[in-house]
Each structure stands twice: as C-alpha cells, then as structure tokens.
Length: 77
Image (cartoon, rainbow, N blue to C red; front, side, top):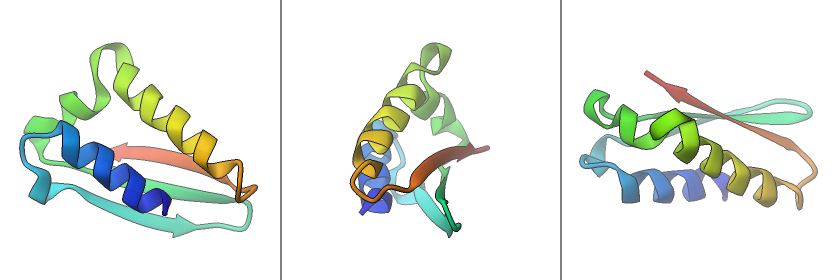
C-alpha cells in the first residue's frame, strides 16, 4: 500500500513517470522504500530545501501509524 502511494505521488510530480520505480525492503521493525526516478526529475522529487521529500515522508509516517512499523523513504540518485 505504501509503495503504491509513493509511486502515485512521484508519478504525479515528474516529467517521465515511466522511469519511477519503488523498491521495498522489509525489515523486522521498519520498512525501507527506495525511490528512483530519471536523473532530470530528481530535483522535482526532492524540491527546494527538501520540502517535497519531507512532505512525502510526512504522508508516509501518517500512513505507517496503522501498521505500527517505521517507514523510511530513500531517494536514490
């Protein structure tokens, strides 16, 4: 569910939605979501001073409170 949420948000922001990929790494107490986008779209996903990335992380943490697990979003370059 969180993977789909991150994909949806990222595809809505970037110019090349076909190159958006989210890899999920499940841990015992946490889940890592690795987001990769086209090199030209990296700035759009991060935003000025990281505001968009912080917003996506805030939405993910709100979504994760139901499962009780910690979610970590890593934006790969």
